[in-house]
Length: 166
Length: 418
Image 1 (spheres, one colour):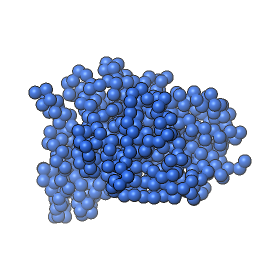
Image 2: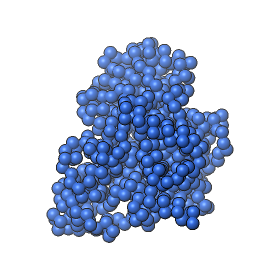
Image 3: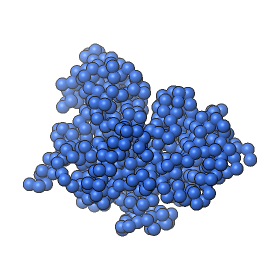
Image 4: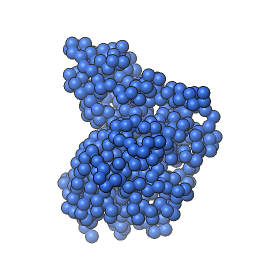
């Protein structure tokens, strides 16, 4: 169960906004977290509390393939990102590193910045506690659910390699 | 099947693949750079394997923050260098290295029919050679380094048809900026683009690299061209292994087919802060600039430098403007030198940088202060892309960038006085 406040953004939040390239001379998640969302929301890092949720409209995470983007978001304490649509490389990367993403246009339309949400990831159920509404997100395709269940692509690959040797 | 489907199917054990299917594709080449390599190496180590799947199918190119921009960057490059030495994977040192997406085709490392994945979003560039090439994150690349394959969802294909004859000064960059302006930054989300039409047939291989390079800016997974004589002329002298040419089936289904008539097109400029904010150069208005960048994986090839030199020859860069020319590789640099282009640039008052991604992503070699504006042949202009969040980047072709450098404001070559 996830519970937290929503930090809501608009369309096409790109990877330069999530973590600008000038911060990419390091790769430790804790370091990246310090500069998360800086160029479009300089107060984000101070404001975000562990368990909080980032929400956006369309094409969240567009631009670069830098995995530093979902890593920064995850290390900043964000528990989940909800959007109407995600850019494909960002989507892959988030799945691979274990940052939960949910797609739900209705949830995005029905939620404001600062609202409190409760999320059941397994069921894809999003409850807006502030407004007393609830939504269901698009379920993951089976293959992606496998990666998530394993805990990310590294774990999934470890299992694959072990079963090859057996 | 479409071109994308044909190439992907050939890298699985299936006769046919369809959009939406999940596959595990065999990979011909895996790529990373100095920014994405360190995370990939860290994740690879977590598997506890002593060896990558095939060192000759992995390449790491230190191009983003090199020659080493600061101590932290030097440490990242060092980590990549040492891993490459340990594993015997392909590595290019300063002196041989260039911008990855200009370098790899030059060295014959990516070929028609290949499936190439890279920890860099502009990996889609190699689609110009009839390969399925796509960008991914460091962890995906790390796992591919271990197993030699990667999970993928088969994309639907959008066919783009460009009819008509290209007007003067209109090049691949203008076609792709126009297209992204037309369909939007997510207009091709999750799809493969298939470029075709008479204007495409007439386009040089460099122009095709430019177009494929920016497929990602429309949200696409890949941007693929059919292989023709121009491709063969480029690839044959460089290939050190056999390759396969695939053709799309004549009666195959596409998700969408979009036709453009290029015969009245003007050079395009994408205004701040989105590649999709494209308009004809004549409609940009009076925009004074402080910097012009000619280079990058989008437009850092010899044809691009040649066009810029043609415009700069016998002229002077505007006194307010910092004009930075970045040949994409050492070979491009040497070629430019032999052709007298470097002399043209220096005499015009431009500087010439070693091959690097540099200012494109706000790294080094030409960063912008608050309130400054740059016209650039690069591929992204989001807020803060090239420096201060109050700076602006205008995307354009080498012809527009060079003309603007002379005029001190954004202008097409036709707007320059003789």
